[in-house]
Length: 102
Image (tube, rainbow, N blue to C red; front, side, top):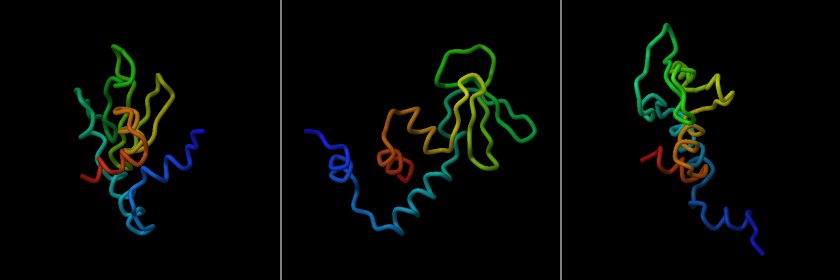
């Protein structure tokens, strides 16, 4: 029988807690605007663009560089750099952390 806890433990890199915390912090700091593929329109404190997760003609996707978060007003979803990368690539949390720290 498949046990997801065992599968996660087997595939998890051997990090200690401090190293893991540092890797997560560094991954969260990776600029979302560098991962976005498309045209960004600068407003006062927000970058507006079309959502990469659904088809649209009017920009409803906001990137907040000040705190490195994003929100789509059409999807009603948002998050940080790790969430964006996970949703964009389909990677799991550990894979996203690994890739954003390269």
